[in-house]
Image 1 (spheres, helix red, strand yellow):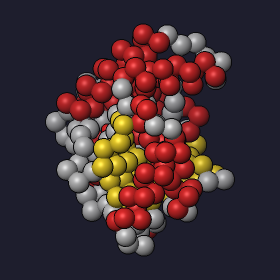
Image 2 (cartoon, helix red, strand yellow):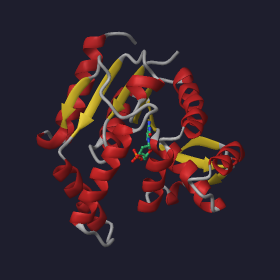
Image 3 (tube, protein in one colour):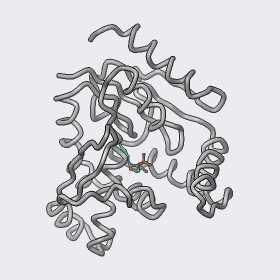
Image 4 (cartoon, helix red, strand yellow):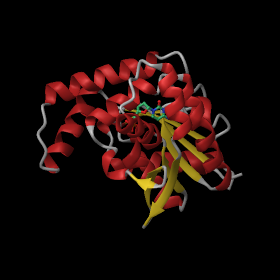
Length: 223
Ligand code: DC
């Protein structure tokens, strides 16, 4: 089995940026599990599935094959063989992913996929329930968070950099709503694992957070 580093936390805390850098430094594979949920959400949108219709959702889950691939080291999501990575970051995809990720059928579908990946390789995996549920034996567990204002501001700046329209108040409200949903769902809610290290990135630079995690790995030992 590979070495496992689990990084959980709310939307916009900087998990993916940090996890990618940690993976690069350690020569581990970075796995963005939110992208798997987003991939399934794209499938539901393409098929025009009513998200309140459990039978339709279950059937749609059976029909969807979600695979991970890497192109020049960058994670790609394949939906039934088609590369849909460019669609994953749309707001409506993120919001639907957050809503359907509360459903048992969706979580069961993706749990196995995530565990299989971590069996074969040394991974830095980020998500909401990696330390608590997907990889409870992970060698290092981090709970990465930041204030709502910081996270909204970061997302706003990112959208502006990409030349997109952005409304800071709306982003803040979306983040609050997503936090509430992700941490109050019944199955595998977002929460800090008992043995996870809490890192608040509001007042830390990216290199400082990366260094902290590498240090945790060194202190934890193992290969
Ligand atoms: O990290 P992200 O914003 O790309 O994730 C999209 C949604 O997927 C998120 O709102 C909740 C869900 N998710 C989850 O429930 N469990 C994970 N391990 C990762 C994501």
